[in-house]
Length: 444
Image (tube, rainbow, N blue to C red):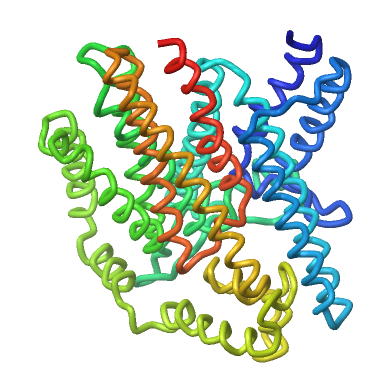
């Protein structure tokens, strides 16, 4: 039986899922507090009151395992506390702990919520998540249009009055006096946007390919995928493209026969022709930009590789639990003199900040995500064997989530978005899927 508070819980849940990539909408109130953080706190309070109101202490097995991972990560981070040496290190650790506790508690509560709800609720959750990223990209179009057309700053007009902070589109450089803009939309960096865009592209692509002829969502999904891909290219993110390439390699396994059909090739050709026509108007300009992005000898590229040298240096001092959560920048400043500098790789941050124990624990968590996705694929095969039409949705969903996870892992070799809030929402979708669709299999 649903609580009277359930509409409030659901509304806060969907609002949180929709806004997890809106990093620029935040306030400095005793620290960095984003809109999604505020919504999460309200959601967790409403969720807890709803359960207490019904005296409901039951949780799905997947939610219990998720909470077990939360306790394990919490123990590792608390043990890493004893390796902190300065007040600055403590402040960084406290900031990291606040975000971790808030986001992982959301993951636990969200899994508990979604696992007990209907298939329709799951699809709405997926739509809210992908829709939020698409909305983010749409803002990026407006942001890029204002910058290209007027050299103006849309963020200063729309976001600054709301947040009181300063932000703007990324200026990659200048060619013959003309600025090269890379949209970062509502994220903090164009590479973050590029990596996040890979998620809906890879999840929605197999679902689109399996839609029946004449299905009402076929055209909307096609247009959405075309738009997201164009924005992916506009970010000029090498990490995003690397992730997209790796994710597509995963999808080639089950959907290779569909990649040579008009359903896939016609939209791709339309995007290609549109980009070719646009680029041809300023061929020299875009040739220079493209050459700079494929050049791997630059300082920016070398930085992404140099940070890996910190792993053995730190592990020689603190092998088990690392320097402490969120403390790479402190160590980097001590070594190089540069402050507030990120590790440029999630895996560097993982080893440096949490040590061998933390890295092994996160590897186990990734293994659990892959295991849940394997179960979802098995459910899809079983539904197909039983002649259930839902298989045409579950199997593409499972493969799309698998491809998106592989893509995110590949992208994070040179960026660290797997510690961002959106990854926790993605993990929730992967963990809860077998519980939601497994009920249909049991009924069948």
